[in-house]
Length: 382
Image (cartoon, rainbow, N blue to C red; front, side):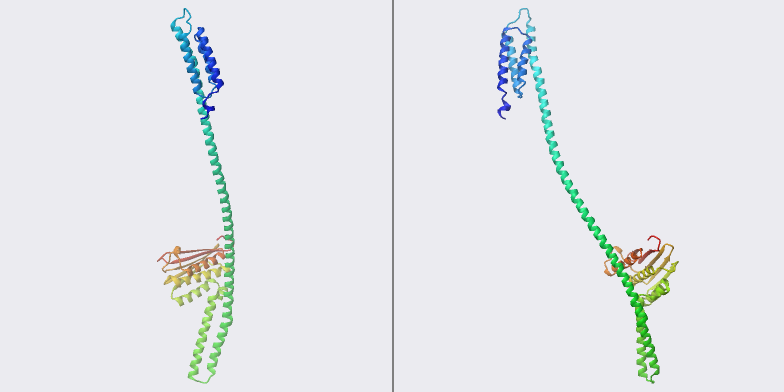
């Protein structure tokens, strides 16, 4: 510590020393009694002006010594009992010590309170600084999160736009594919197949007009059979592209014709049940149902290893339901890894979505597979 905090003001030392000496001299000459304590309280009061705790205690102790010495050396008033003189001196000591102790304890309490207040202020400032830092970090985090959310929203918006664009392109592709299938089917059936039929008739006529020759007759008969077979293949190919019977006679007859041909080619027994179908059925819905049934039966032939299958077409006032079930090996839909199967289901889903329908595939290993679709009619919800 420096001298300014450990050594009292010299003026206080001089004042207390001078006043104490004067009171001591006065006490030696006059029988002051209790009044001497009151006078020495003035010296102590001056000493309390010092901020050092030890200085008032030292001055009070010195005054106490002076009071005792003054009692021993000072005059005794005649007629005053000894016990009264002693009591007066004790009261004098009490008069100067009690206020000093109370004042110093109060000062210590005030100083302790001030230190506590200063410590509290310091902690409040530190805590405030921490809170400011935390608040700044939180504001930075909130700003960063807002930027991330904005970026995420923009990304999601872009993805949504891309998804709608892809769906629109897929719809255009499927529509163009169906139109192209219809055009190719019509050309195969109306043009190429008719030419092959005329060629078969001409070969048969030419065979009848030639002179009888067993070798030539066999050659022409073989050629006629090949042309007829090629005509059947062209007709079947045209039917695969787009069955004109679907547009001419409706969905049930077209499906029945396809199922018969499918059973003949694959050996899988397929039954068709249809009930309460709207008449006429919108062309886009009829085409979707036919293609989904065709794709589903194709999957049965390729992957199911089934012996029989069932196709159901059920109509109502609100929509049409198609179900294709098989008795095959089934599969776990969550573990499908064959890309061709996934691609087939994706194509079916897209076709059904274009007519606002729903597609559901139910399957489990050893339990077969069922493909269900529901297509609402105009004015009803999917």
